[in-house]
Image (cartoon, rainbow, N blue to C red; front, side, top):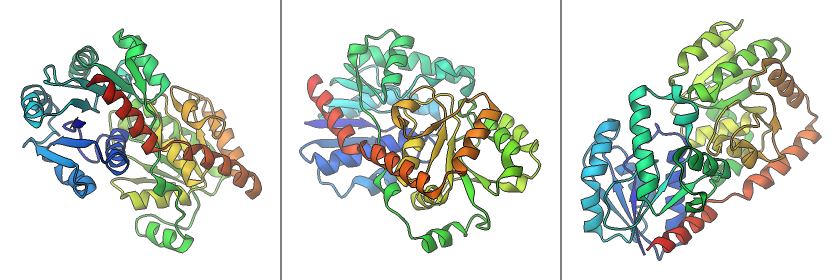
Length: 378
């Protein structure tokens, strides 16, 4: 079977968990299912990254569409006008588009991944024009494609709710955390690595999220402002500014000691793993997730998680994370203090259970489920 993969949406470092989903799924397909020939349709920004991941596999080939996808509207035009011809020329048996949208025309059956319907539930995350274009393209994709991939049962329900597509057409394929998050980094090595870009004189709480409104990072900042006098911890935030940045900045300005909030961006995977493994607690106050990969990464890293019982997060965390009201600053702070005050034995037992649950998700299982769907539409 020859699978074409539409990677034109991918701008490395800019699309969050969708990048992890694509790259890790492709690696698993290449490693565990060598009988499947993958043809990756790439852009100028992701071609070298994907070749670095996959060029060593003989059954993977690349077809570069020579444009920069950081211009979203250029990408849409090239995806609709140029990609169909490239797919036909490649002889692909099926075309998979992992990033919400797919070509209107295709010489072979198509499958699209729609990770969430965030633009419907939280329209303030996008400009009016971006919402309009996204809505048109998503609705077109669900009707033109033979099957649809969702990354959680919650996302499956959302797709059906907002597009009207029959849930029987949607296959759920969960994500997984990179196994590297579960491989312990020696204390001194971790400390040496982290000290190159942040102070190490205090313990810290970690949160990983861009400042989209639905990520609720402004609320976490207010929570930290209410509890910082009672704890010795800094708050480390990893993520890029987005449309909720102004509200996040306003919340930051309201706390008494801004030096205890450390903002980091564009970290390597090794640096991110060190941050996860070195924190005392991972806080994730999100209001909406199609899956919630950072929760799973923290669980695999062996650190306690405080998060919200919304959207897909309970599917990921189960009974292995701590839940708090995402709108109640006081309650969220109470839960964080409770977790920080656990004994070492309580923390060990809790985290062992979380690690075990996190290990039950695997990219091999994701790839296997997807390939079964590919075969049904050939």
